[in-house]
Length: 185
Image (cartoon, rainbow, N blue to C red; front, top):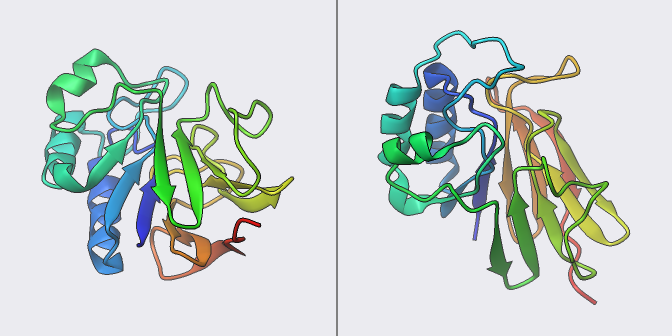
């Protein structure tokens, strides 16, 4: 099982098209979207290539492969454009080796963890800053942002396999961060 993770697209068609091309190349089984898909948000500048309607149409082509959660910039209006659900504030993905808690990151994040067991993982976005590490036996994974990276970072996405988590640069094959999956004890 391979999971492709992206967050904070913020309505940028160019970044979304690039991300979807990377998804195709990855041969991942599912596309996990961690929120803030169509709206740029009131604190962000409008990104180049901002086109929420076309971004929704591009994502809809992959609707059967998408697992998504709602970000703080997502709304019912956004849901009306999308052919896959985005209104849940969290979701769970059960893998043979671990449980993944998916959320945007504005409520649950590394400093406010949901109830997790040792060996589980928290997948979140919101900060636009990539993370791939363990803290107290919990996987913390943030793919960064495809559109508006912060802290002088690069646009990025994530991949999770049975053995590894990686954050990749959106514009190249470069792996920005990586950590091994720990098996439950």
